[in-house]
Amino acid sequence: MTRTATVDDDALFDLRWQRAAADLMAPLLRLYGKRMSPDALRDRLRALLARKWAERPRDLRALDLARDLSPEWFQDQSMAGYVFYVDRFAGSMAGVAERIPYLCDLGIRYAHFMPCLMPRPGDSDGGYAVMDYGRIDPRLGTMDDFRAVAAAMRAAGISPCIDMVLNHTAMEHDWAVRARAGDPHYQGFYHLFDDHDTPLAYERTLLEVFPDQAPGNFTWNKEMERWVWTTFNTFQWDLNWENPEVFLAILGIVLDLANSGAEVLRLDAVAFMWKRMGTVCQNEPEVHDILQAINQAASVAAPATIFKAEAIVGPQELVPYLGAGRHTGKVCNLAYHNSLMVQFWSALASGETGLMTDTLRRHFPDRFVGAEWATYIRCHDDIGWAITEEDAEARGVTGPGHRKFLSDFYAGRFPGSFARGADFQVNEATGDARTNGTLASLAGLEAATTEADIDLAVARILLGHALIAGFGGLPLIYMGDEIGLTNETAYLEDPDLAGDGRWMQRPAMDWTRADAAPGSNAPSGRIYRGTREILAVRAITPALRGDVPACILDTGHDKLFCVLRPGREESVTGLYNFTAESQQIEAHRIGRDAQDAPLDLLTGQPPAREDDRLILPPYAALWLHSND
Ligand code: GLC
Image (cartoon, rainbow, N blue to C red; front, side, top):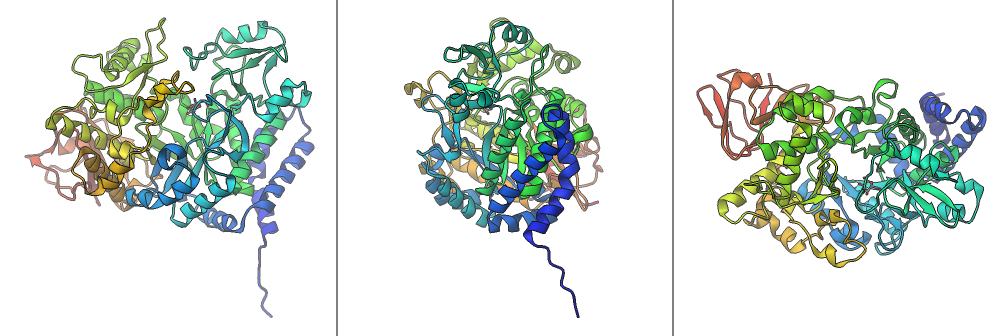
């Protein structure tokens, strides 16, 4: 008689619980061991996970199994992301489904739906003030519509990503409404203070995110006669993560979103989740415990899901979001590479890559365990010039001086600047300003009047896309950047949006241009085809997988940036020219033999050379192949 081994879904749940239990309970006991007994915490958690697992649809359980067997699925070189507002991209959830062929043509395998859960009415910080996490914004559709578009994407090989705001809720969220009505359970969900002394004591070391539109970090609430912690806008109430009930409630929401078909959760503003008196209340160690617990819990009840940290913090604070020390391999799978983005723009303005090379080499490891960067050039937010004094001084410039140069350059004030952006949240005391503008406007397309200037702007945009695709990590293309959309001004007419200059870089998709792009010689067509080609080459180049190290080479050439991707079978050396002039570099400076004539994968040709020197045209990107 033969025995057939079967593992049913309950047994799978048990196995996954056993796999994760230690890594799940250890951070939770550190966080909540004093507020809840270990047994109660474990029992509540396990019951929650079992319930969500029982609700998990069959097709997603099949995906769970596939990803348990290939946990590195998201690091495949064919993974490339697209980031869009549902309304601005396609009107509605149903409209997004119709645009799947467009995403496939571009080479997209990951689609980030910008905030689309039920926002508060009026100004909702672009949807980041959520009043109901269980509903889609009715203007866009219903949760069933989201499930349908997510399933259609899954069938097309695209992983949907959705925003999960876990630092704060809208003040209109049911929890906040009940807190205002006096319910002590829900008052415990927020940071409330009877008097002003404690908020003022915190303010001594806190920074301000929106000093112009929302100064300070606390807001007086008349109904409760208490101060509320509001890091962002006054209508965004910070959740109190010291309370285990907050953890359990948010975890339930995370798993519901995963069960609706979101494969990637973008965890918004995670740096701010834990408060500690006397600090800036960002990046506290407890944040990484919370992130580990969320990730490990999902590995039990929705293992197909991965997490992306949105922590726009300085270079020293960024690495732990992808796992450091005891959290290695256990926290987020993706984190925005804010420093790479800042350094791209810095090098593009100065035409010098020394600061970029030094900073990226100094602060970041060349690989992570079970995690990688989300690389990007532009997104919906402003650019904060996160360049430290120490990094600037090591290159002979000052921090404030270089930051001022960058904000002047990208606002178009610096003589000779090609950029057309705008200042955001200018700090009069320090002179620091952040910058708004679309990729095309910041890269010179808006200001270009001659064919030569247009060529340079197109080349800068493609340089950016080649860099994020070749660097190491999952590249994210921001909606409209693939057809060179320039700054929007229409938002100024809408009173709910006019106060927030970030709407400048959130234009509606121009489908006339996008539909024509594949066959057009206009800049939009050249950018579209160039971007598509970059992603297509990447998709067939295993050395560009996310788990291949990204080794930044110090070539001593301060106009070029160089990254070696030493794959298992073959390597790719990415060389990026940040100037409007052609540049030359001796082959040996990038570790190549002088006689060697490597293929540039992006053009399919060996690069031009003179003697032992490789020649890079203005703003060129080369991906030099080698299989030795
Ligand atoms: C994130 C979002 C940003 C928002 C903030 C507050 O940083 O990207 O747009 O304003 O969180 O939710």
